Image 1: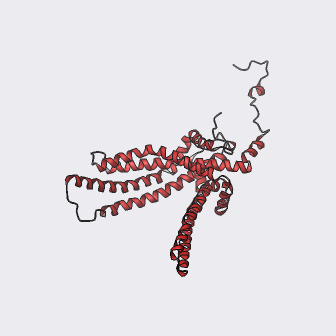
Image 2: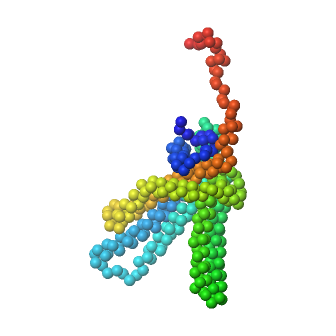
Amino acid sequence: MKNTYTTPADFWQERDFGAKISAAFDFIGAHWRTLGKCLVYFVLPGALLLGIGLGMFTNTMFNLSGNALAAQRAGAVPRASNPFAAFSALGLGGLGVAMLGAILAFLLLVGTVHAYVRARLRLPAATPVTPTEVWAELRARLGRMLGVVGLFVGGYLVLALVLVMVIGGIAGLGKVLGGSGAGVAFGFILIPVFYCLLVYASIALSLLFPVLWLEDRGLFASVGRCFQLIKGHWWATFGLILVATFLQSMLAIVFAIPQYAVMFGKMLQLPGLNSDVLGLVAQCVYAVGIIFTYSLPLLALVFQYFNLVERREGQGLRLLVSQLGQGQAAPLPLADHYRPDEEGEY
């Protein structure tokens, strides 16, 4: 029987590697209408802002490149003026808009996907998830989402600063001891160590959003919970992220086709394909596609969270045990009104 993912017991299950990927696809297949509506309501504005910014940036870059190629084919002598003056004005502005849109779209996507899962766990099986339910969950946790962004940015900056200070201290110590080369070499040995620690922490913290949304813990308590759950399953989570991200990138290639068509049209100055409006539309299609398809890795990590919690704590097993003996009574409309020897009403 196909899983419809409408009851908590459908989520709290142990799953092997392939089953977690399949669960993400099955969940999308079962809820694509209601989940897609929520993504359109909450994520689409940020994705369109990202697309507009990318369109401004790429239009400027492709137009400059196309004009330079056309001048080269015509044998014209390049001007001595700065060719990046127009790029600085519009292109860099578009890059800033794109960065703002990317941050906004990613936060809204993460919040919408996890808010949808949380609402689905809370609501009865027969009740569909609506954008109103998702917004109620999303609004209550926007502060935590911003706290996660601050934690990541601040944590990476602090770690980078510590690394620079350690390397500088070791190099200074080497100079004092008369072996500066050895000190610098030893300092740079710390870079791979730092990188490995950063990768390990990043994979562990990939479970932060499911923990933060589904367990109602504080920010720092959720960080500790991530390292607790990932213990003994780091490589499985790392492989899951790689495979899910690869599949997402394969799906996103379809949305990149208009972008490449516009790029070649502007580079070769083909009529119709070199339109700036078409460039904006193509980048909006690409941005919406890449943001929406990123729901797949997010859902794969959600099912990894359910899998790890089930292995450690048996949450789904307890749900099934608590439901024993609570089966629904059979409906008795006929028994209430008629006896077996009666013919009923006509």
